[in-house]
Length: 201
Ligand SMILES: O=c1nc[nH]c2c1ncn2[C@H]1C[C@H](O)[C@@H](COP(=O)(O)OP(=O)(O)OP(=O)(O)O)O1
Ligand SMILES: [Mg+2]
Image (cartoon, rainbow, N blue to C red; front, side, top):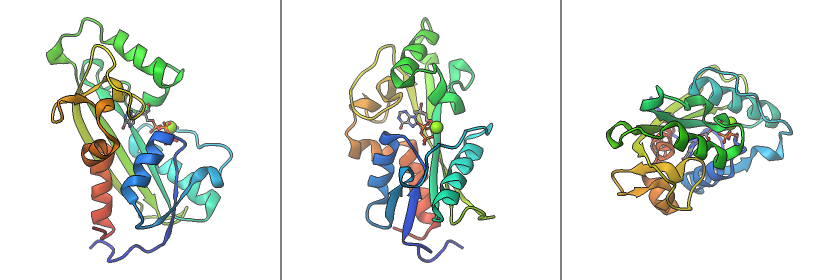
């Protein structure tokens, strides 16, 4: 059974990524008071896990421990078929130089790969801990299928959005409005599952 009501009225968002924070905040709306982890944390958690789930739990636990509040973390990334699923859990540190360098590296790595073989997906795992030692965290995953473009398109969003072609929209992810992206993204799908688990509408 899912919880009938939210068992808390405040939540720490365990992310240092401004793009993610904006999207998660927009999706959570006013259902709960959301505090950024920067209010409680000096050093971000080290993402030492070997899966999205492990890293999401590490980040949520770190924020819950520091704040004494329930914490929601997002571990996400891009899995490219022609690269055997890379950059995957290493998406943020792919080129060790931030979003722009990551995008340049992805274009380079896929040079010469034909259109039909440029399939990829964004993956998002949300982990909610009611407190740092919560033995039954809520874990929700969302996936968004697309293709990697030859050149960047659009200026919205963050991360790999300019290189991610969204077939269902006929646009790059960075050409979608925030509302459009938040209605169909991997993060939106994971959040929808979380809302259902929490008994929210
Ligand atoms: O909707 C998205 N649109 C574009 N790119 C995206 C998206 N979602 C994840 N991504 C990329 C960004 C980053 O390269 C990696 C996430 O890495 P990830 O460690 O989960 O996040 P992060 O280090 O940026 O912030 P934090 O760990 O503090 O939440 O995947
Ligand atoms: Mg990270």
